[in-house]
Image 1: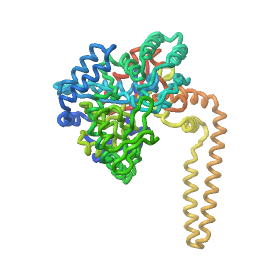
Image 2 (image 1 turned 120 degrees about the vertical axis):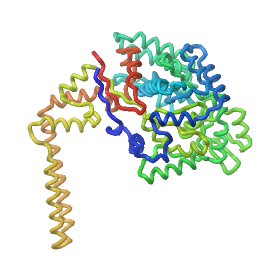
Image 3 (image 1 turned 60 degrees about the vertical axis):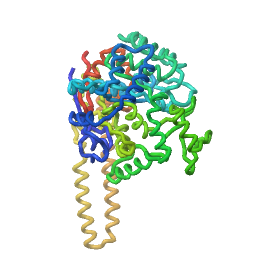
Image 4 (image 1 turned 90 degrees about the horizontal axis):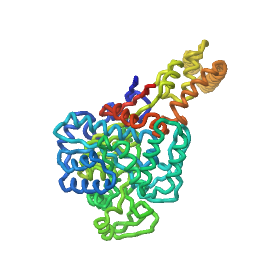
Length: 529
């Protein structure tokens, strides 16, 4: 198996903010330690996590794993009670059947990095953690997945935090998926895995079991932070947010600094970045005046005293949004680093001063690995067309146009003609200025007309040549659709089920094996025949 690896800074994956972070060009005002061994050494020395917090964390995890914990998982959880044990964390939504492939890529990376750190810092222990986004309430984002272009959807009228949803109705989706691959080598194993997981009564329990079945023997620990005892460790955060709105202040100022440097803003803060959780609702909290709080739908109202008392009595009813969730994570875990995608790193890079305001250590940020999984049939098709994997970072139309120009026996590159036209009109404008400036507008109008005509001619010739090379165009288009399903990146569209059906647990082993870097890469994995 031959793999091709690309640095993220060399391909169009991330925005300028994340690219500058990965290349080392971003100011350290926006992040903490660097993602290297020295950075981890410094992080280990400075992260503080009390014995009492460890006791609450361990007790909570033991309760969550009642019924199906393995010896490996139990030992990992117990190790968290020791002061020299740290976590490496990734997080994701509770996508049905894991959703797109990159769900697995995050977890494989966090496992691989933990294993590597265990070899580098032998007096410490590192536990990989998957943080389930159980409090997210955007059901439409998680209720479906795609397998070979076919969409599978779980229909449900439930509302509120998705982790609390009943799994009723999922069995029919799983049955339909399994029916798509009746003769696949590992279809029975996939069926058993999914059926076993979704027999659990809630989506959080089902997702924990599914991920445990896939990665539990690798030492992964799955955490559900929608838990009274864990929320109780963060009541000071909830109170500080409600009292001062500190996250909006800090993030707003940091956003101003980012915008001044020309960087995009991923998330804009609200005045209060907390929700109130009820059985079937997750509703944003608003502040009215100096002493009153309400919900955005006005279904509940508190005085400051009453709400702060409720925080102490029922901390589980408070839920952080996307900007405070990272602070909650670092409050309840002895965490060193967070592994995420480009969008996640973008909003983490807005948060350093928010962490400082809350007296929390900012974690090392790591871009997750990305993969393109291709079989030998696809490899052969690519080689037959003399295409490199880098070509598939283009759009389909751009790739086809590139190829038509490359293989055509007619020179379809109009760049010299465009440049010649540009040079001629520069000279004509100069003549117009020296004679009568009123002619300059006419020159500009004629320039636009000529350029448009040349562009139209180029398009018509390219279209004609596509007809001549229609077989070549068809082959490129079909290959592109395999590599970029539904026009998107494979890892963001395709579910793991197709690949698991072909490889079984070897898929999981391979993803962990290939996730062998601290900072992520894009790797094209060519599967053996």
